[in-house]
Length: 114
Image (tube, rainbow, N blue to C red; front, side, top):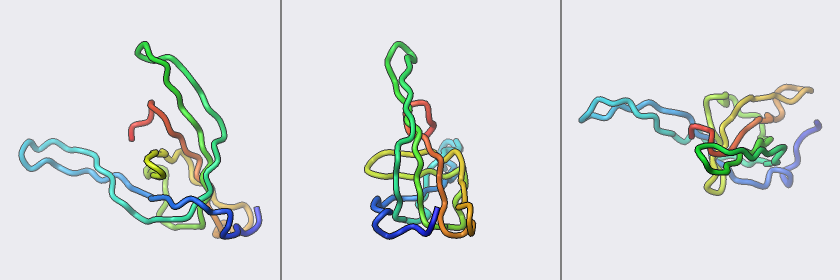
């Protein structure tokens, strides 16, 4: 894929990483999310799945999110956009320079622990 034009990246997203905090009263460890950066991105739904779980119909959507190359992105992080949370499953660099952009293979839906 050639260089990404600014017009392609039209979604303003938040990149977050998990943070383990300890409750000072109970000592319980709780996962929280801390903002890493705000980035421009291109978001495309690539597939969807509907299923029945716990007696209710649920859905899961797989997405492809493209951002400019950003060094600390890994599969433990998530993307937040318009009130939706996208779990990052894989971080793929571009095939040419490996420094131009990243394609994030993500999922959104009820089965994800976000």
